[in-house]
Image (cartoon, rainbow, N blue to C red; front, side):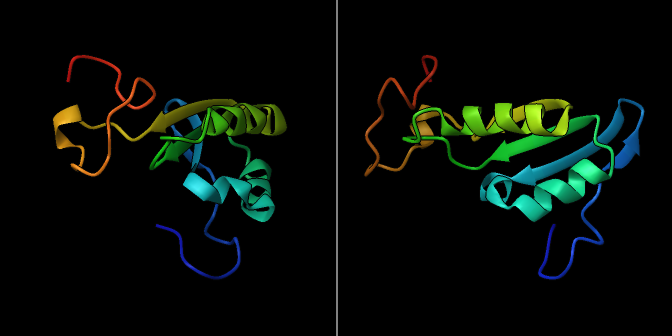
Length: 101
């Protein structure tokens, strides 16, 4: 969990898979947050996107740009839920539903 302040706590951590770092959603548009993780030597970046509906692949483009900029692997994950859990006011569409439920 990130909080206000400098980037002292924003760094990659050692794991058996290499140095792992991550940002959520719109944190990827913050150049100082990205640079802090780049400087900490990320090998793998986890890019979590809380909602990817209706952004026309913008999250995929941002994740690819991050991989190029950081020279690391990126695991990009978007929100996943059952179609039956969608609120009634949201109409399912082919862009939002992948699978029978």
